Image (cartoon, rainbow over all chains, first blue to last red; front, side):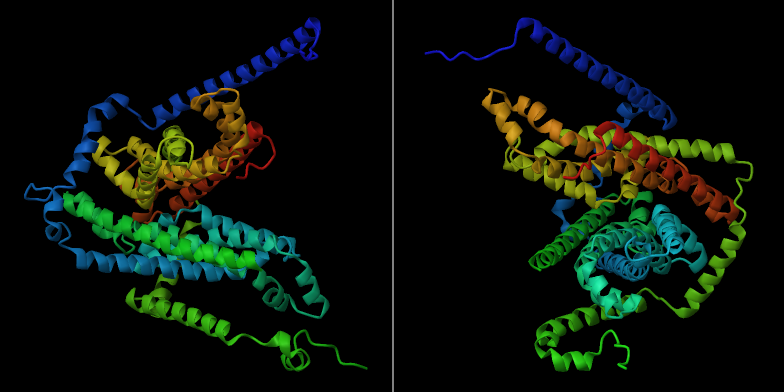
Length: 294
Length: 284
């Protein structure tokens, strides 16, 4: 036996179909306008950025040839045939990579310590004073918006060439970036413990020490590790402006066309960044697991 | 009258609640070990990187002098040149982000588990994106300069390349986090794999992707301000030049211009985000 499926009268159906078609048409129109605006923006930006597709297509073979050339030694053989010759400067480069890691480490450490002390003033639930909160937030914003390389350029003039300006530049940028993240973490805590501590007579910093820090510490550590990963990448280019690390070697190799050195140093940087990523990811996952167990 | 109770009287607390106040020796040992290891590495780094109070002191003194010279910030007659360079910077960030998003969409699908392609393809895409991300934008700029020559176009390509790495990872994570039910529904009505992607996945991931792309546009504007340092166009060239020639009032002026631009883009992109995907948070 067939079951009758109730269905709309044709007239009723027509109005629904018409409404659907109108809604679709409106959506299409909005999308078309959006696309036209996007296209205009692309053309304008392309003009500004001197995009020349003809030149690009004419020169695109240079990318492959450049990428090919950095894998050939001076004697014309491919690098894999003579690893010792390829990584001839391994000892020197590893020292520079080590310095790069130390720059990132110190910068992250100083930045995180600074961010720790300022973040509570910038979080809405722990800072009752709107003026100091506003000031703390604007300071953090300034330090995180100015790129660290700009700080590095200025510090190189002030402190002289070498890793010191690199560390300070990374520390300042980290301070701004972590301060914001830390204050957001602090804003999401459970306030009951803070109220409890204050009700028994705790001062502001005592309440932070005994009621806030235990709640936020593992998140702070996790964000700091993430920042360390980013800073290793950042420290690898500090040498471009004379602020220490492996970047100095890399930019020299590129500028002086030491092709096989470029690929060797790049591979070392990539391997280091990947190793750091793996290690910090491990630690972060165990931190998160610990947080979830509580 | 009782004296006002102090917040934490450790001795009294330990006496009254011996069970609660016991700190496990193991945890304490671990904490001490971690902190002292970190301090030792920091000390080694300070010595190795030649930090000294004399150097920091004289540097801070210099910095104070520079800060004094920065006030008041002036363009020194090159306002229009700065403005043009800033426009170039924004154009570099815009095109770089857009191109990266376009190229990353298929790569994101390839790198996501269980959509298309096999495990081998997924592995290759992921390693590719990891390697690309391991290299800083500035290094990509150096490499692209060798291909297309000095100028902003090299900057566009540099931003694009390093963002392809990030977007591929972010997109694939967003795709993996989608609800499978719409896709199953599409399959159940006889849809092909392409239909699944278009009607099952894309409506779910597009808002997430859009908000990520807009966020990256803002952050790329900041990156684009520095790639000029190696000659890849934008305001960075002027900035580096002004710093090297100690024109501190102009340095301050350029930094202010950059800050204002970033703030405008931040505002505009958050408005655009709400306009495009509604006010609901586009979290994964």
